[in-house]
Image (cartoon, helix red, strand yellow):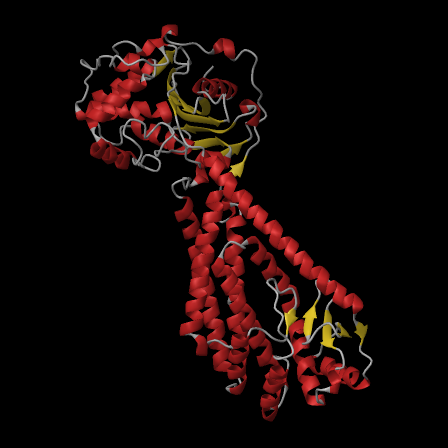
Length: 589
């Protein structure tokens, strides 16, 4: 579970709890006790949702998986020819940026979360062991009267498999417990101070818990309480859930007895209040009692109880169904909102997914290629293909297009003077025009273009391009260098198509100038255009790109390869991987 998943879980659980609490307040009289309790199962769904792989909650598409059988050819390296070896486009000219290691923060919070879970799990085990010791020390009921009343209650409720009933001096009020085998624990010598009717009420209450499977479900709620130990609203919700559960159980008991016995049933519960002062943080059993506040609420419920009409039941079911559908509809929306800046929602009905992992070696990453004539995508790594990462130098072709369109540079006048600062690459210590700046990926050249274009116009173009997350919040000289701006491989391919077809209606000469600047090779097989990019953070190459397109006589192919690694994820490696894949597919050898 990642930090974004934890944030998503907080959002979903908080929204769901607030909705349920509001429902209980405004529709309290329109909901029966049983359905008020059932509302909390919606919270279980919300708490589970962040753990579900996100692609399982997306709308299914008509895409299919295709396992490619082709293997890299040993002649691939020899067949990769450049227009001009002096341009060195496969060399890595990257700018290292200093970034705070957010992975440390994420790891820290996840470690704290795991430690908390372990501690609360151990606490649950302690309580479980304590209850097991109570069961081990308890003895079977010997009182004939209690045994007969118990058998009568079993027959009355139609319980097929009897839970084992025991007595012990270690408990002061009745409780039901058991993960695999269910036990009803009664205070020892209870028959000495309770009447037959009162014993009957107690047994009915505990058996209704058993019949309604409250005991098994209780363990599920405890499990989620452990997982979400850090969320105070979850603890509050489970506390209210336990009240709703007891009131639902009280309702079932009241249905089982005469109205003239309602007061006696309430007084029976009160009789145990003074005898029981213990409370557990994690309630693994279903005790007859709760907090004094909850006891008071239950007494009011018992005193004002009336038979639930069919209309009330229908209203309860209708409200539950409507709210369930509403919440289910909101979960994907909240999920998308929480992750929209990180992932691209791609309609992959025209996509074929392939296993190309053998080309990537130790690198994580994705490859996407689109055939214009077939209108078809071929994609490796479904998840990574829609994950947004910094574009780095692959973005420079779009900076160039903006600068040309804004008149910052022209085809005849694109020369910028070196600013005299010292860089890591000797090739940057010179004046450059658009062609050479693109070839040597001269970062200071494109940073100067950004400064002259200015932030508001850049934002305008990012919105026009629909460029990834369109986030320009980073510094103007590095927003595309492992900073705020991010884009996915699929978006890169879609953007290349739009650029190639000039769907943004730029001046045609400007589009052609950028194409010429990124032109890498022309052979009898076709023409290759492309741009590498390397993301270097704290002197480690963590993010490598190679994007571009291939023109052939029969088709135009648009591609994007992204690789990620703790180090050594260079644009040149992404280009090498692209070379091997395109060659194996017979697109460009």
